[in-house]
Length: 130
Image 1 (cartoon, rainbow, N blue to C red):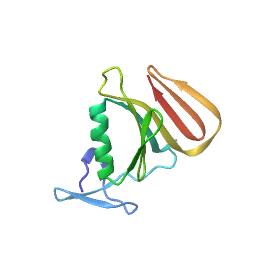
Image 2: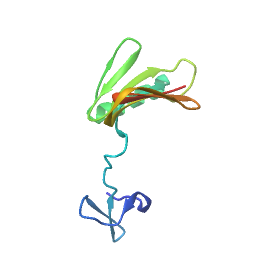
Image 3: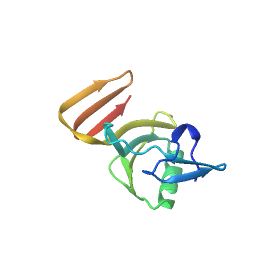
C-alpha cells in the first residue's frame, strides 16, 4: 500500500512504515487531542438504481443489509449506512454523519453552518446537511 507524500511524514518509530517509489513514509499518527474520533454512521439519500448498487457492494464487503420502515440499514465493520430512497430525482446526497468524539462534551452544543448543523453532546456528534 502506498500513501501520497502530502499525507505522510518522514519515518518515525511510532507508526507503520509504507514504501512508495523507493522512499519510506508512515501515516501521520492519530492525534487524540482532536475532537472528532471516528465516523460511526452515514445517512445517504440515493436514487433506486444507485441504492441497489450500493447495497450489492456492501454485501460483498461483508455487511448485512435489511429494510426498515422507510430506509435500508447496512451494518458492517466500522461504519453503519442508513440508505433512504430519493423521490426528487437526486442521484446521491449526504444527509447526516454520526461521529464519536475523543472527549466528552459537558453540555449540548449546536453549531450552524451555511447548509448544515453540527450537534455535540456527551461523546457523540451529529452533523446534518440540508
